[in-house]
Image (tube, rainbow, N blue to C red; front, top):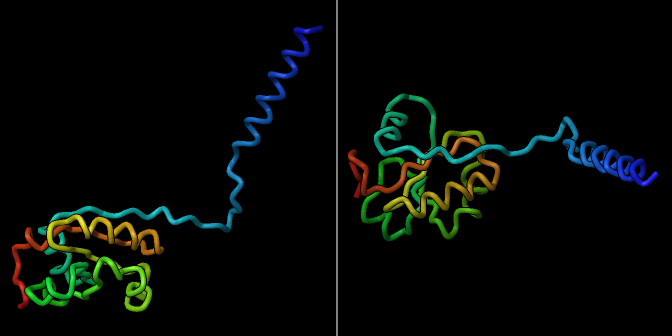
Length: 136
């Protein structure tokens, strides 16, 4: 009798565990599974030269930007990116290339953009690795 109760209890726990662990999301729900694409400056340069559409984002400070930046870059300082992105990056599916000085802030900003729902983020690190021209 005790064996039967134990066996019944184990079976009940297994059934509850199996049915309780299912995916409870509705089929029309979509989750953001985008992730930051980490690339180097050379790949970024190739992407920019390809003729395909992109947005270039510099996440340094205004002073750093004024000292020199990549031509065509949009300044969205890292400490303001959440607010400015909503205003200036209206296409959440656009290819967005992100850089800073050394790569630390671009990594943080890139993840923030993903968290805001942007889907095509490419972090190419710092301008210190950039071999192309700099606008001063």
